[in-house]
Image (cartoon, rainbow, N blue to C red; front, side, top):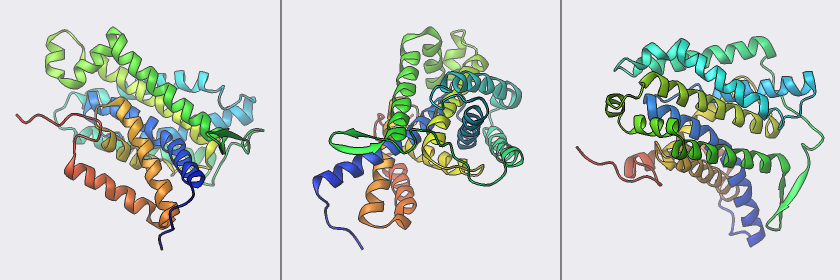
Length: 298
């Protein structure tokens, strides 16, 4: 049964919570956007890498006493290195093949491998990172919200902003953009496809690491929670527009708002159904996404 229209302060609270939660989907979608832009690969293991980063953050906190948000200084560089190695070890040869199904199958295999390794190392029970500020709240626009959700939103904004600056202001970033638009033309201009792929993949995994920090400090998690994040990031990517980095973050925020409104006005049981229904509707009627230009027909 649908709820009546709530007072403005409740509506503002719903919108704020939805936007803060959706930003986590958005930063995961930014990583997906980079990887898809260069390799034309839907990297379904992105969610598993986010949860792996969350477990890494938990280990740093309980093992070495490193604050989860300070661990960004460790997690992001490690993510860059892991992304580079994973590309070179698993995807380099497959990326050269015209058949993208090979890369997709490798990504699925990697997802299951990471999930099972996490289960072996940390067990299958739900884990969490509880700090002195976990239950703290702050006031934004007159409504109170979680401190950790707000920090997750800032991480998403900072990560997306840095990626946009990298793509627009650096020579390497411009090479990545050129390759994402036309790999053959970029190759003729002297750009190495494998180097561009490796850079984009490394940044994508680094963003998964940043998202892992936000997840670890905000939600309980287990080794199999990553698949949901992959699906939600894929929905956010479709909403924002494939290849549009800022649009991917916006798509995540829109998805978070949809989920918050559906949970309040209809029922929590309808949340995923309506979110995926919106996803299908966008693919059918505006496949380029809400923030991208229409595709040009050949």
